[in-house]
Image 1 (cartoon, rainbow, N blue to C red):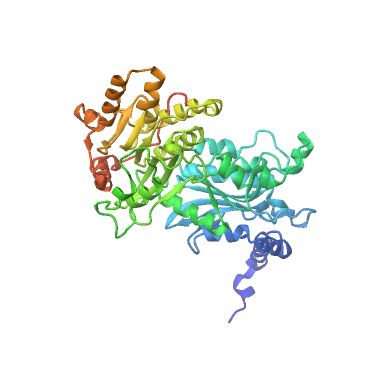
Image 2: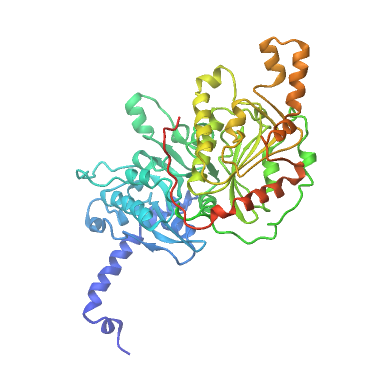
Length: 510
């Protein structure tokens, strides 16, 4: 048998050099730095890529970038960014992972070009894009060559055309961190942090001494700012969330729907436990998450941003195997009154769902928009207006259900206005409606007792009064909720046929 060198002939040395250079790239920051990274409970960049994609499907792009740095003072295998494409549940996805073991995951000139190349490919090939962040932002040593392409510009153009997911798996600063707010869905691990500038630069710029956790950790961005959506305990859970999120969306805005998944719980059924969960008295709270778990196909509920804006629950789920989006008031949080955080969270979620043609289901149980000085100073009116515009502009199917109460602008935010593009508008039988709650409104207007009694009676009979004028398409038994939603999806099913196109957004969002 001929030797390998004999088989390769004159190609032997050339291919040998190619394999040597590939080996340099795959070694990342070296054994010592990788061991330190793993000891912190983190996957390295290549392991993160492998966990995201279906086994054996990853194809690297730009693996030899910055290869000529090998003999220099600062070797940069793959220029600190592992990038390429593969399949997630059989569908093609592009992804990049910053390699913290190589120059702290900083963005070099070649890495910047790779980031732009990925966004360009995502738009060109119409496939989702995932970024996994753990890096120090741009390197001070970059050449910054004139009018070179900028990946943030490409991401801004890409928004709404393909799903964009960002996983923050360690400290991410500067330019790299800006990827997160440009993404549709952001997950942070407990080790993650996002900031414009890290603690040393903050101290130098404004004299503030702060830890990376207090500056931009999960308690800041998952709980307080809302920049990140969900918190994962570790890298593996964050990657599982990314895969699950992508399963609810089509690959791009030119496709009508996400793939339907098989399951044993896709048909009609009555919600026998709902009457025990929801009291007809609107003053008695219940947890909307429990109701959503009853309504959706078994084990399909995936809440987005559960630790922020608690007055509204935003969630993905499946009904009859079809992916849908839920926007639901939560009476367990301030009776469901819509505050600034809840409105901003809901507006973004509605825009993302609408961009990819998901049906949006509004479950309404709120006393209106949150009043008071704190709410006014937070800009709640503007955020509520943005949410109203987002739901009004929806071009995908929308279904509205008033569960018990809806007052003032709070009802409009939840798609209750009649003849506003709803595929179906429904109500439970015991609902209370009005410009404002009868007791507080009557007291503010100094109405006499006879007038107050009349207003209370009118509000209490809201479902039948509005159904009488076709303000609602129907009044349903609460136990029929799931079946009514399935019927609404069947009514709108024709919209899911044929070609789709990206949603155009005219006008100025508040």
